[in-house]
Length: 445
Image 1: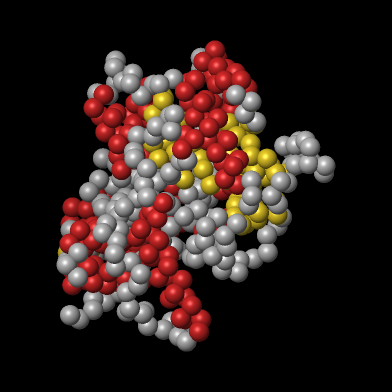
Image 2: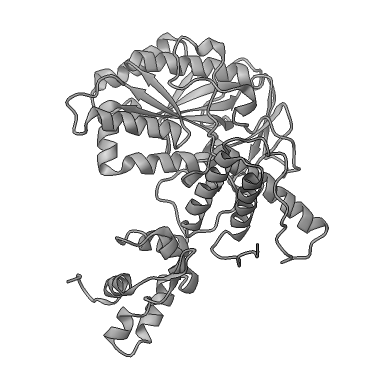
């Protein structure tokens, strides 16, 4: 079968997914073939370049297995280029090996808690150890840059960080109850502003003599690989209505921590809300099954505090014998995944993590233009990608409109742009709509 020409912003990932799909078809693994086909369809609709398999996690049908395959294949590709292939050499055709036995590559790994957490059962069953998501503590070293600082075993304490919104505003008595419960369980915690999530854990270095914690303003801190978003049922309902629900999940996936946890409080009190109970329960299930989050349901704030207490103790045991190395956001988002050797974890500093999670951080003109185009009704991701391929910025599109001799030419300027795998025209309707959007002075008619 002749190979299709490379198209779209992610030709490498498209090529590899096609190869894995074809290999699954040859081996009779129909479930895997369908999984790869769905992932391909989702990738072709995404108009922006992806720098790693980890970034592809935001797309539909991209589970942890497929993302890990892409990262491993990407690393092999770079190694071969560095060793043998000239810059700009051909894309390798060999499929990623070692994944022939994966039945469903969209399988989404989730957090598996130790037996100590069995008193508060999660909603999904525990996966086999071989399928647990690999954290930055379990991967081999790839020779990353020298860390800014190191926290050695016995030289740090695990601290629960609580977003200040969880303790102020709203019903004061209810929010202060969380503080009282944590204090009653002797949980070391710190209240501060978190730009993503409601709870997370940091490893904070101890004082010079190891007996007391340094003040938060002077102590060096590294963020552990877990973050919790807490939602009461009324909060969940309002976030779905105003659109925050999807946006918050997207930001949790992008924050750089591998284990997002969705804590649903008052899970059985969904009556008398603006949305039907069935809709809310479906949203929770989608968060678990489709988005790959670990979902924990609790009955009230006391049970939520108990869960946070158990998690704090669990993470203290998990990290106490490990050496923690600081890394930068660039290393975390680099094309190769972070893979330190056993017993060593590379983690973000709290300052860099929180700064990178700012909601309204700067974006490139290309990214803003892509998101702007996709707000137009009827303009899908693949259509936006086709426009972006020809006009990278709004300024270049406006220049093309300015070069048109009359208004009719402006309306038909984009109508013949080829879109999607079938290379169909964008069409006169969308072309006219975009011309009106970008060429009409003042409000639209």
